[in-house]
Amino acid sequence: MKRKKTERKISSKNKIQSRTKITIKSLNQEKKLNILSKQIKLFQIDRREKNIASFEVEDGDLKKTKKLLLENKIEILSVEEHGIKKHLKKLILSWGLISSIVLVSIFYCLQYNLVWQIDVAGTEVLSQSEVSSFVEEQLSSRFKGKIDTKNIEIALKDKYERISAVSVAIVGQTLKINISEAYIPDEMLGNFKPICSQYDGIITKVNLVQGTLTVKVGDIVRKGDVLVEPYIIDTDGEKREVKPEASIEADVWIFGESSHSEFSRRIERTGEKKEFSEVSLFGLKIYSNVKNNTFEHFEYEEREENLTKNLILPLKVKHYTYYETTEIVENKTFSEVQEQKIEEARQNALIYLQESEIIKRETYTIQSAAGTTNVTYILTLSREIGG
Image (cartoon, rainbow, N blue to C red; front, side, top):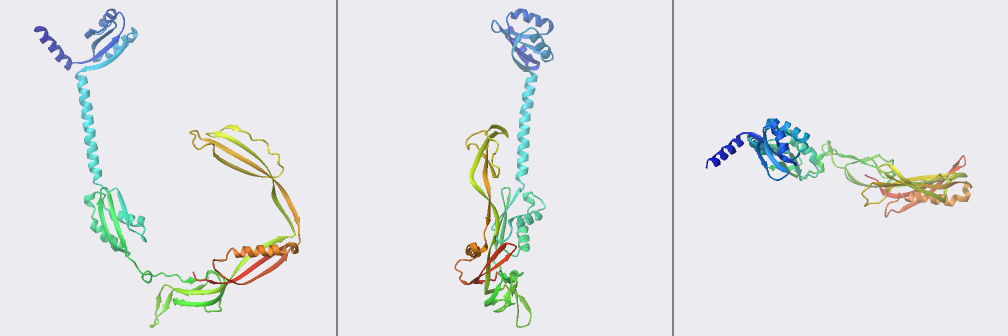
């Protein structure tokens, strides 16, 4: 009975004392433990097996003990803290974890009361970014409790006439703004632009809906000339802005050109070519079959692509192509190619013909100077010119 009480006392004392338990592996345990005990005070010595033993040392002797174990070539299997130091560490770690959880919870609660973004929906004419920036200016604070959604609604209606209805609400951490835009007639918007001619031509037909005409049938107009001004003079003699509307047609001219030189040079490919390639990895060349180009005259093309799509390594292959060229010299008079050049000029003019348009007249002019002859083909057609 006395032995058991002593064991309990030792156990309780160990819990209070700060010691470290060391488990070692070594032959001749008794001899080596005796060597250690002469320099360090050992506690709770336990020889578990023939070559494995454990003991406890004061924390202040731990460093010295490890050094002696290494010097005597004794293998350390484990090092475990016991006593008050171990319990203090557990307590500190526990409090650290609890503190972290508390801090994170406080931070989450604080940030949850903030509005982080503004979402604008329902706009067609108004700019979402412009509305968002305006609302940002109205916010004195990002805290939900300090955001007055009704005042923001009133401010938006006062700022933008086009808003017929608006609702502002805080959803989560987003300020949601839903806008309904009102239809505003063009007459109320003002700032109308005049109708201007898109082409050169002669006016052939005028049908005015509203606005003030500046041209009449038979007038010659240039591209950009004003056809209808955006206002009218009312019965009181006052000038009133309106959106100009009119249908104005004119005979317009479309041009196409071609040219011919009696002495001409041009470069053509002969059909012969040489192709080379090289493979690289991370910019480092790992394969190449590039050789010297033997063409005297040539055109050169280069392109790079991935060697394979599914390969993990970024292998690149670069292709080099040399096309042999030759110079063609021709001496032809214009009379030899006249019909060809006239048709070429005509086709160049037809490119600008719109669908379902009817050509009213076709003509061309030929001018020669310094061995070069220019052909200008002219198409006359009726077209709506107001834009």
